Amino acid sequence: MNPRIALVTPLKDEEKFIRGMIESILDQQIRPEVWVIVDDGSTDNTPDIVQDYCGRFPFIELLRLPARSERKPGGEGAIVVALAKINPADFDYIARFDADLLFEPDYFARILQEFDRDPALGIAGGCLYVEKNGRRIAEKAPEYHVRGAVKMYRRACFAELGGLGTEIGWDTTDEVWAWTSGWKTRSFADISVIHRRPTGVGIRAARIYRERGRAEYLTWSHPVFIVLKVLKIAIQNPLNAWSFALGVSTAYIRKDPRPTSAAFRHARRSQQLSRLLSACLPRMLRSRMSTQTIIPSRNSLHM
Image 1 (tube, one colour):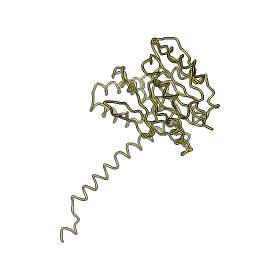
Image 2: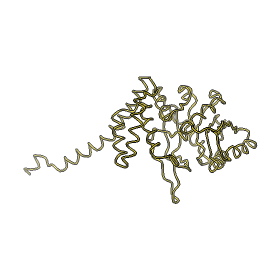
Image 3: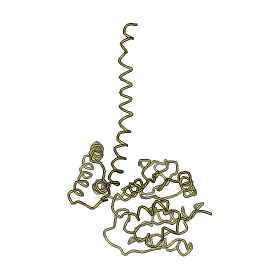
């Protein structure tokens, strides 16, 4: 028997993408048992398109929220509504997908294979790709990080998370909580998902980087990691680096609420320091080997 999958999707004004998304889920070799779609106040034809599919496919359910000027980044306020409609304990896996994606027919089947291979894998997903000039270009992300647009959780792991957050950086927060309980998290580069609207499109760069900076604060990023990230961004665009730093400092001054667990903070910062160390060591070793090659030994001078 196929595992039981519950899928939730937040959306707003996605009439350009939602039909393709739904069709790609309907084409799956393994379909979700239930799919709760929450419309977060669309002003276009999105609800009508989804409702048409609901009438033909009973496992799809549409919930509609009233229109409003502000919404949580990524529609995370709507996710709370979606999760309230299902009982995660009734399913083997819980998936949370954005509405602007396209999946290969074997997507669920391949992700489930990865869960089967590794019982410690708690959160998994494919890699997001953007199609440009006939080529697929990956949206860069570390292998351990599963993008919020395409997360899938093992039930036991999801239960230990206590639900999903609604603040920016939630898709890092859930992973750190998973690590503190011994779970692994991973995205698989060979399992591709087409992201039809690249991350950040339609949003001012200043806002994007300010929110990213705030997310670093909310997830307890190590100060060294933050400084290095500001410098890296500054090399490409000083204004974006300023916005990023402003996001971090503003959240710090306001003392925005973030996890108070020492284990959470330790897991997050230890992982970042480990990444920095692994990036620096190969360079140091290469430099040392190069020096040893250039400088001859004392014995060789007398040969």
